[in-house]
Length: 336
Image (cartoon, rainbow, N blue to C red; front, side):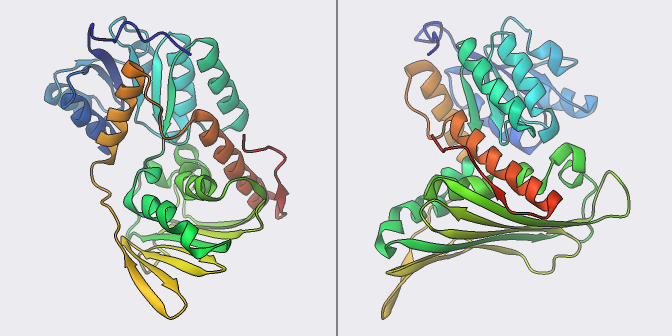
């Protein structure tokens, strides 16, 4: 699909990072540990934080992401900034002849996402939308044990995060984070990865807010109907009107059930309940970064494609339209 001969045994991959927050630091640490890559440039939102980040990782400060994606010594751009800007940066980076890694979602507009995926192919440049949830211990344990419960018919997936008071940051900003199930796309992508094509979505969403741009709380509940006949309920909530931390995933099948509460899992079958060993959530950014470099340099397959992430973005957009219009939205797109 693209020429990776420059990286094969010749020189490290030059990386530019957009952002200086938690994700950017995790990426920079992973790059520092891998001699096949070299972090050469960083662009951030806050000058002091950007200078400190650059100093920690011996990178050059670039005044804007627009300038960063045009640097000659940058082969790969890693986008670790607010959701709103993902699409614009990815598009400009690909147009500038760079490979791109972006945290989910690719962007907040389905048509734009389709154009970016097409652009990566036209430019013959690598595009990777990170989905760490697929690499985590809970998801891997789910995949391993699903065959034991027979035909699945119902899933409940709840993630609730109380925050008192809610932080006034981008994850509580309508424009910067986007519709809750788009900004938190992993809540739906995990289901699509496990259960395939979605037929219809019904969603209800509520915000609690005392100003226009930022909210103090949100609750989003969606029902997804899958082509297999499985029905899934997803609940995503955060902020000041939430009172109990919850991270629970249940899959009910005709021969048993899988129940994960936090990082603890059990397999329930007639007459017995067995504990399930769940791997750690630590080190996933490093794992993803290593897999990206393996793919760029050696052509090793990755665990997710941009098209798969794009499909889930379409499901999330259907949830947004359902909540906005108060109707069930039917999806026409096939998964592949």
